[in-house]
Image 1 (tube, rainbow, N blue to C red):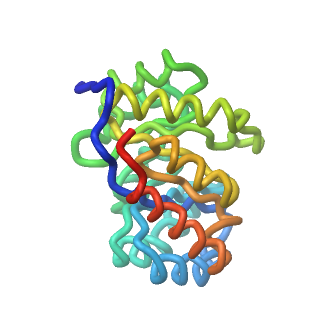
Image 2 (cartoon, one colour):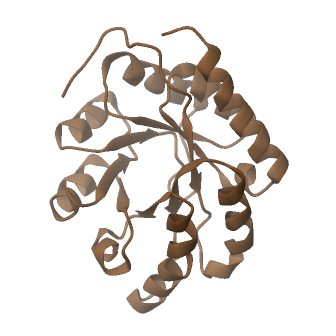
Length: 216
């Protein structure tokens, strides 16, 4: 795992769209299509409400072609066992231990990302276990998330010393800009951002501004 104490200039971060937990695919289909058509989206992190396996598969498959045909990767929030069955591109696992258990069944064919990392040690462990990216700042299932200053500190630290991509989770436009400035490679946009065309456009503008900034 390569490291660097002072990275060269980065490209503008790209957006990852994070869906609300879905009980029905059609709840977001129109808004998701509009967002994918309007911007260069790196990935969609699909969160699902609980249900039996057939219901989960149906929700994933209802959105898969829409997402992938627009050039975005389809990542499942959990459910690594459904990645191959639904032709998704990978899974996002919460916590280093969940990542340790699921990654061997995903890599190297599929993307295996890791979030829910409470400490620097956990983040480094995820990297050592082969995470394709780490995410900082996402809410848990109860909707709780770390303080944003702590998220910025973690993103800045990671960007300075590690080359594995870092995703910062943004719940509003101010957070998008701050995460980009801190050195995030990707910014995960909460649905409150990408479901409104005006805030989506403003988020893209905030990321593009990162190109003109001097190297970190």
